[in-house]
Length: 424
Image (cartoon, rainbow, N blue to C red; front, side, top):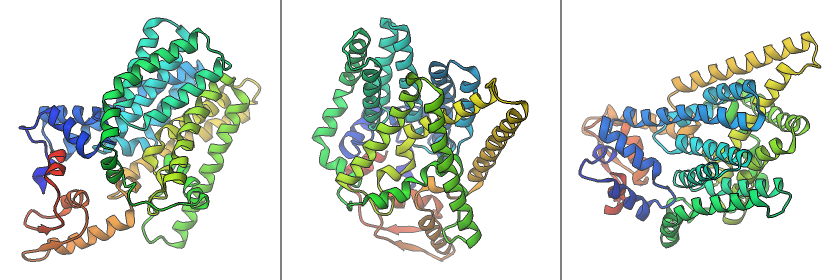
């Protein structure tokens, strides 16, 4: 099993792209091409592969600083947004996984900042940069289509629904970026059945609005504070979890209200479209096509909500910066806000450090299942001449085999040759 989890030097980048196109068309190829090149340079150990995501995540910091400067014209706000992004649990977990979500985060920030710059400067070079960023983001994550749609709503609204020069420049730049993505659109079209199978759309159930809403209220907590409660929580742990969930939800709703009250339309509309179009797009997907009951639908999977999380971070940074610099506040009120900001940043940092030391978190999937599997694997590893019989998918076994000793034999339902080729 292990040999299929390390790069094959006989396989080229074309094999990587072709494998994704045939077996995982929902995964756009840019990240996988770059990580293959990284592995060819430094090796295919798990730590090396994860280091590429960590390195990519560093580039997200100047990108969110740039975006914040374009939005708020405030160095303090930009600095706070950069610090908050760096220490949030969701971004830290993305930087630790050998998956494309750290690069997708960078691409969303880059595309958003490039749009605001192009709208401000209004020259051909700035719109060319935006066109490149659109193509870059689309080739990083398929859900960037929703973000691009949000940009269209924003530009059209700012132009007051008139086809003026700036809107036409935007349309041309967007068209160039989308045209560059057409080859992968064709791949998705011709492999639609495979996409549905690999993304789990062939094994979905209809989810009610109430079922989805129960998960939505938890999402701000997963962004800001994740206590990483055990699979069988005590009463105290349940109270802690509920308190964090409710507190984070109220805090985020207040930051949006504060943003609306204290900024001009150019600012609040951008953040609202960034958050709203992503959330609404995923909700429509869950209500119309269904989702997995175990995950609560796509709109309750944190990694898909990355654009929403980025919008929340920008709103929080504005709230803190405004309160720290607002001239109408009395000295004692400003001191209280200094303490609030210090507590917020320090507790977030402590929470992120605790997740770093934890063996399993929500980013690994269902924590209770992971802990049960680990307990079973400990027993298997201690058994003489062990043989593991399972009906789990090949993907799950390949992931969990990291915890098995080399002498453990595994008998599972077979994978096709194409799937094995795609892995390598």
